[in-house]
Amino acid sequence: MKSIVLTSMIISLSSVAVANGNANSKSQRGGAYTGAPESGAPAQPDTQRELKNISYSFPINEISQLDFSQKQAHVQSRQYMMDVSGTQLKSGVKLNTSAKGALVRISAFDGKSAIEPQQLSVKTPKGKLFQKGKAFDTLVSSQAMQKNGMGFQQGTTGFKLEDSLGSGSFTLKAEKGISGHAKYRINVFEKHSDTEMHLTANKSNYLNDEVLKVDAKVFSHGLSEKIVNIKGQLVSPSGKTFAVDFMPSKDGFSMNMPLNMSANSAPGALWELHTETQVKINGQLVQRNGQLPFAFAEQTAKLSAGPVISGQKQSPVATIPVNAKVDGRYEVRAVLYGTDSRGNLKPAMMTHSAANLAAGEGSIMMKFDPQLIAQSGVSAPYVVKQLELRDQQQMALISQ
Image 1: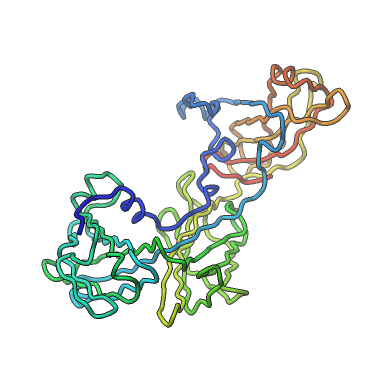
Image 2: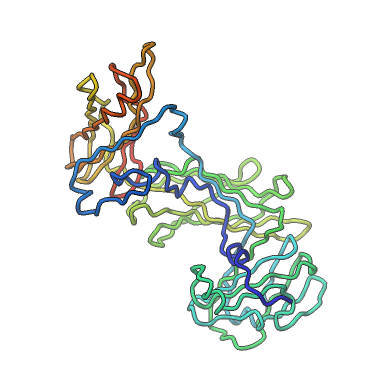
């Protein structure tokens, strides 16, 4: 038995799912407008940035450099979790696994009542009993978990089951030194399992009153498995929860939920759909949990008409009409196309412009960089395409 701390194990234990990076992108198109280039130049302080009308442009030669499509939100999970009491752990709790070498993390809700791996016994599917952590080939104490600075709360420990013990239904039991009133969350990550839950939403950004559409499926060895139980809930950035209903669909379940609740939350914070599924593999229940993140915002403004371009020589300016429901700071992003020597439209630059707007009809002036126009070799007539409107307070795309 190895009493060593493996950083890779700690990272694995912290993984809830493998997520599509689009949902939390910090890319040039996905981040909040700062008025600074993406090269790492510092953004202006909020007090300055939020009072100025700003335009920032960067060159593009091929429109394929930028992706304007609506991306699906997607996660896949080979892990599950359960909440148990100290009393239950004293009696023994079942850990069903579908592959060898499961990674397990136990977190005390109060941050104090840690259960060290040496306090645990394990009974294998064949009935063999291992005491004092002898079923584990890797142990991570609460002190080591904190020392490695992986962001876990106090009272968290972890271990890995010996590969030689195989898979099946294990019984995990706390032998001593544990309060019956303590509450714990057990996370089980099956790195080597072929049983994987997939959650897929039709897009990753939603506005109030739009419909969240999600498919839930479980695959094992590449084949779809019948889900025998499924439940879920929406969780807001503030922790408020909303019940959801899944309906049977081809190869799994789906949900269609109108987002008619308030989207008010911390700027840039994501909502999550928490889902738990169970399938039967070789007669044994296998559970999977996953959290699907997505952006949800109030539509505080919309593009009210097409852009109007003036100064059709080497210094064009576009007026972007915006109808704002509330006072705020709004940003428009667009690609400026000019006409090349053959008379074809060619993309010259991507421009971000931001301004403070009062509620009602207003506009944002989008100023294009004359130097970039000269470098691109295009001239009038100009066209603005791929237009997007964002609410900087919410850090959200609200119209396009």
